[in-house]
Image (cartoon, rainbow, N blue to C red):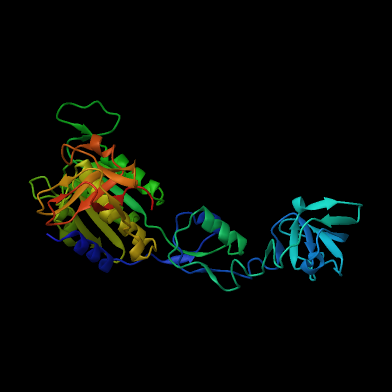
Length: 403
């Protein structure tokens, strides 16, 4: 067996990010940038007013209150550049360009209207007051979104603002899910005491979509070698990442390892020193196909997906390796104990403690306890050789939500 870090390093050394291409910015949500997005000009492109009020020459207000003559008006979007001499001001609105001779803006609230063409400024104003300087946010050519940035709503708005309407992004991996087991029945089926409804399929399909990777194909097959081989070969034709649950251990009906080999796959590891999820495997087929075999118990599926499968999907989609497996470092609400014989992944949920956010262990009755899984937000990671961590001790925590 390998340790979790070795497993991850094996995955990264065996795959590479998918090709990149230009894509309409409005369709880039959850994609990763292959090339940075740059400022096409200074932002803002000119000195602009941060307030509604009057553009003035600060020197004219040294002895304020002072009455100035209003000689023009500039609104947002106007190209007007009214001349401004001593004793004069220009009515201005938020976002409007500052007239050439003005060096400050007085808020409307700090003035008193007089006749139509004059205004009284009630107090002095410092040079530069309420002015957004040209290039204050960014200079032309500055990197605004770096390579590897994951597109969110704000990133889309940045692209729109700088005219980057077709950024270059990596393709997202196409995902297939194969659940196996003679005991599995469809979620809507009536089941006997010897049967269970397939919950792993819906879990993985939803998790793939939840993390921004679109719709996954899903098929459930019995413990039949020919049917499993047919399902795997079809998935290899249409998908970049194949997730198989069940059948990955060493029992009579654990057919997955041999079927992967028969389909032309190469298994890079089979067994990780972790609990839950020890029997899981990783394989590749051809140049661009990744196969993950996960044990059938729900908590093993949850742990394996978030520890290895999801980070690998991110890596294939162009996420920098350092961002693929982010951790939180949080204090424990109560102590945890393990046998220390392997890496342990304990269910945990986030709570608000007196000192801030903390993680609370969630008891469970074993790796088949999907009810306990529904009460958790992620896993507490206890390294090999560590048998106990006291309340208040800090732990690595893997969130199942977006980070």
